Amino acid sequence: MAIFQEKVLLKRLLTAIGAAPVRIVLNGEEVGPRNVPPVATVQIEDLWTLVGLLADPEVGFGDAYADGRIKVDGDLVRLLEAVYESRSGTTEAVSWYSRLYSKWLELRQDNGLRGSRDNIHHHYDLGNDFYKLWLDQEMLYTCAYFPAPSATLEEAQLAKMDHVCRKLRLQPGETVVEAGCGWGALALYMAREYGVSVKAFNVSREQIEFARDRAHQEGLAHQVDFIEDDYRNVSGKFDVFVSVGMLEHVGKQHYKDLGRVIHSSIGDSGRGFLHFIGRDHEDSFSRWIRKRIFPGAYIPTLSQAMEVLEPWRFAVQDVENLRFHYAKTLEHWLERYDASRQQIVSRYDACFFRAWRLYLAGSVAAFRKGTLQLFQVLFTGSRCGPISWTRAPLYNESKPAIERRKWVNVMS
Image 1 (tube, rainbow, N blue to C red):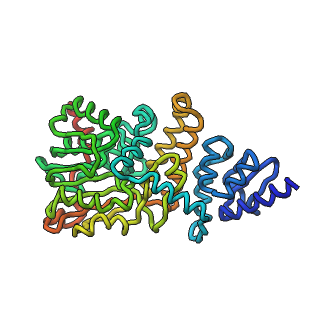
Image 2: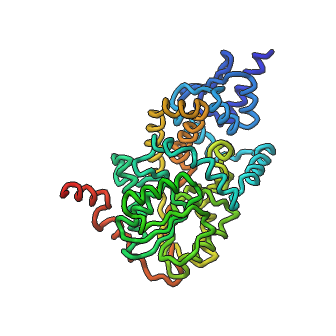
């Protein structure tokens, strides 16, 4: 009788994931696709884990994989891609439990002044050495820009920073405010390569301390001021506002706060830039990622992001989607992360390693399949003159700083 029940529940789970080409195994019983080779096999440890998957497939799978109660034989990214693809375009009936749990997370992880600091601390203050294991040399934890698919991660991250600067048409002597500066790479790059002065805000103490040390080491402390504070406390007037990878942490209910800060900073004559993860339809963000990895995260559609700008009559000058660039960035991160398994497990534990591996693999799959997008939005105040008549200067002018740096190294 128990075996019959397990078989029935396994078939129900296969149906719940959209009949993806996946084999599912429990206690010797298995179900899988007919006439199609499975992309991977999911080994479920016990009946209670299976029940948890049926009750809440997303959180149930994430927790069980991290805990080791689910093992995946095969390529984890391909498995997740297959599930995303099989469920694409379907209308899922969200359970009352999932809706309630999602709402509870929103209330518990609200990005107010104190909550935002707690949420950021949970994700970014895991130790700089952890991120050094799998990020590039500049410590950039945002989408890179690959001038060619063969570019290295280091080359692509330098190209990304130059891409941002060239879009903004930064000029020597200008003032820039950056909201959410990470470990400081972009702020230092803008100052060093384009001669601007930067005030960079961040609530992660470990990141700010790292950025300040680097500014002193590079002799740029007089040009870049790293401030440990919330973006809502930005004050002063600037020529340019920049935010790369922060909008995801703001929360939709706080978009008016961000818009007010931007307008207060650059008024009607300045220039601004938002770089953020987005999606092509409105939906709540992953409950498991909010629970285990990114508390307080919210991924907006492009139209929702405009709620930051439209009340202040900012004019959008350019929108670019770098979705495939982020998929490639994440492929590099995941490869480096897997190569660092021993160090990560010894520093944290195997459960931590698997949780972050699932987060990175799931992100690769989401960007490949279009569940997630990466938007860059260039905007100006209503009284700002034209930044550029065409996009030609962005691609036709002198090569990015990575090429200039190679030339300088050769000459020296």
